Image 1 (spheres, rainbow, N blue to C red):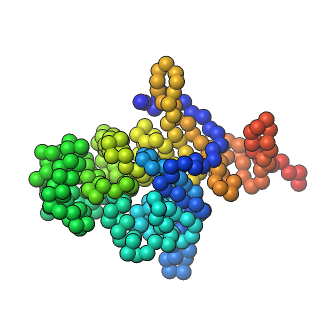
Image 2 (cartoon, helix red, strand yellow):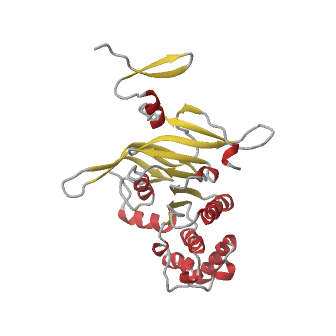
Image 3 (cartoon, rainbow, N blue to C red):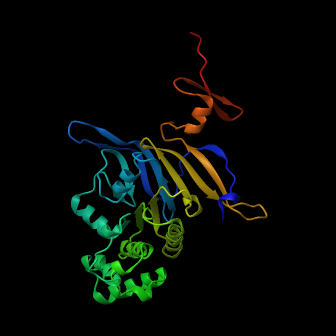
Length: 305
């Protein structure tokens, strides 16, 4: 599929309700450095179904990495609801949180030095999370070699990370994150240090792993072509979900998928109008909203002084 084959359509959308593995409702995260309060997430609503491959994008400071850290159990939410599977991430105990991070979620960092132990071989790096979880040696090696086969890196199992290219290191990092067969894989800018060709290969790998293992995968990225590789792209702006882009099957003869853009309406009726629309209409402050022929029409307010 290529970007040129897409068409775009903008409509309003309500959240889906079925088969959800991740559910965030009215989620807030407030950081308090010194005497300041920084609100990173502002009543965010998000649902991700089991087995979905989703990308989260947004400008720096929009809250996307904070959301990923909460889903990973690395940050506690300040308020609202967050469920991953049957785990309540707001009220989970520290003991259960350790177990969750060990077996239920895998995490891939942008910097490979955070993912891999430099003095261990590729196979030993993959075995390490399983050893910590108490998996016996035979099963560790079986799982490690299975992952290396899927990654196409069987011949690199005895090399150290320093003997691999950046793309190969990231492949091994993904294998490490999947070692304990977690149902959820999170990745924070996994191609940030790679060129576009290698980035495409890594995102194709995420697609393959999603298809082979059925793992739910959530990727935070700035990569411009990410929509080609995922089921949907979730856009965060100012700590809330503002829009989504989804690929849908086309019944046209070409068979190309159609890219549709949606504005997200949250559970209390809030929405964020795309900035380019606001700029074109010079809309700020008051506006009017009316139902006309089954559609909601929003117009800049005209108020006589």
